[in-house]
Length: 203
Image (tube, rainbow, N blue to C red; front, side):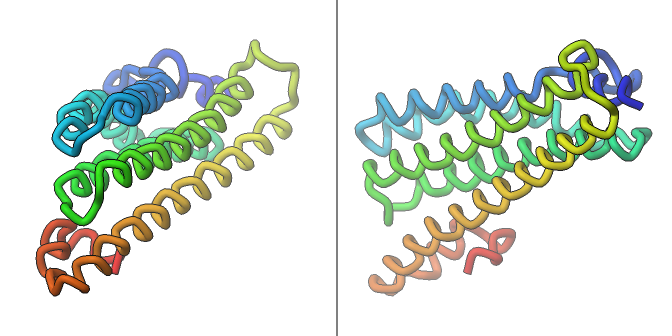
């Protein structure tokens, strides 16, 4: 059972899925985002620099999409799979939502930089939790019983799920700022159109 769990981080689960390191994918997005915060002084600059984050995200999305198609996992291994996919979901919320915010005139460049910083911190913290799981499921890493390993995996999954919920809340709060500003300008239709019907949960 644990061999299957470990294969989520190294090797193959089946012939269709070659594993990359999800921690590295998240860290690539984090590093690119830090560059945005440090070097972008205008919205136009920020949009240009954010393309590197999008590029890394697209590389990671292919990995997460392949992982979603893996169904022949035992129960405990699936919990690890779900934890990794939650990191992908956090990245997805960040990249897609922030991309829309970059074209939203209701934010200043300084505010966009602060929002990017918030996303980066949340992704970093959730990625750090995933690294803890990575060390635990590595059979050669620690001398632990199967139950102890599974307890850590459960805690990790719950922690990352909480981070995903926090990122969703953070996104809703930031979009609500734009909506309230648009409401004062009587321009809410444009904001609603920007974030789309898929994001109706934000309102």
